[in-house]
Length: 421
Picture 1 (spheres, helix red, strand yellow):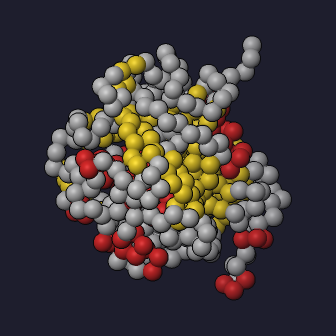
Picture 2 (cartoon, helix red, strand yellow):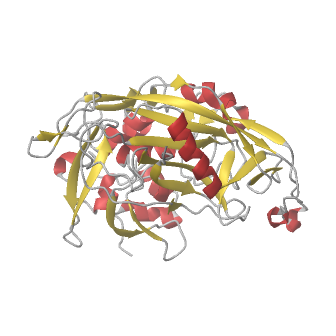
């Protein structure tokens, strides 16, 4: 029997550890997908802009539209989770949490690249078990799943992703919603990390941080997506406890905080929602539950990498681009080094690290507040070319609006639409 392979297209959110936080997006298998998919939980049909419907891939409920960028006259199609805001409606997506338990060994890993001589810090590999199951209860209690009040958008009794989508499209105070259902907590998956594929160390502040090779983890995640028997209409969230990914076999080329994307277990080709019939298109999210002080300058306004920051980032990006394939005109990332550009509609990447406080976090080290991430809106990427019914009520370009630009420096650039590269 031919072994099945899960073909993935996914994007990951990264931040540099031990240096300035630099938002970035890394695609392992980027693919463009211009078609709409199902807009109902029964995942049987999808509607196009003319009201027609046809059989599409079985996946989470989505809607599709397009915008014309006024700066280059090009039309860009996109697909998002939920229903078309111009038509209203409330969508709830089934979800489940799959905790990942990483077991690290202390072998012959050379971690000297992590040393900080100026601080007298010498890194040392240690034996450690880091279990995402320990963070499940807090994750469910967080505003990602538990309805909260969001003063920034004058919204109340909604989840984080719902608040962002309602503000993005000027739907606060209406019946429009994009929600996650109460997650089903699955059995914890244990991953034993060979000494050549990862390491656990105490950082200069004494915080336990796990690092795992990104390519190796991608292969493990592909196998998990096949073995877990997840319904394509359900969003699986793979949760780690302060375990991040590094690239190029270099522990210092870290850290990827999370990722999202989609894949098909029935084809070796890049995923496409054009597939007819019962073909399944599975979306997913991977995120680290972050310990406070894992990254430099926490909790500065642009360095809120703690607790649900990574998960909120990925949920927002998954809602705005569930297949990780929405493309836009290439844009400059204001907070990254000069010349850093992207053409992917990744709403969290431009503002990675930027956060706003929400009360209720039981972790005293986190200041008793959650650290959800700011999000760039569709109109920022579209250069205000989106339909009038898809514009925020106050023309802001990020969820935090004036709070984003008020940070100053490169963040002031979010007071206007994206600039081309």
